Length: 119
Image (cartoon, rainbow, N blue to C red; front, side, top):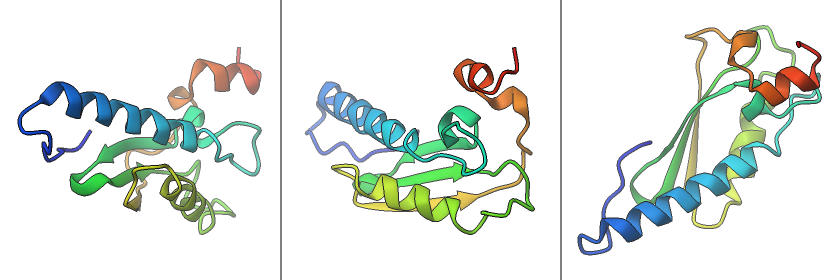
């Protein structure tokens, strides 16, 4: 995760707990965004490479898509941004779409592989 400014006068315990809670809420939100062609959310598909909480609770999400020619390539990053923006405590969202490393099925969670019948 990204660096946070310690606003709790050196009390790392409070900062870390707050950071983990916000991180967990962001992951929950990401699990509500689904690939329109598959019955699996983007997080479990392995399309979310990084979730960084930056200074001021700006959230940076580094993600990819299953293929650069994805027919909904313009829509999905916007859905991710909009969903995370509504997480309490998030002040801004930056979504970075990357193609390296390229996505592959090994990046999926066990749950996603089960859902798609890959076992």
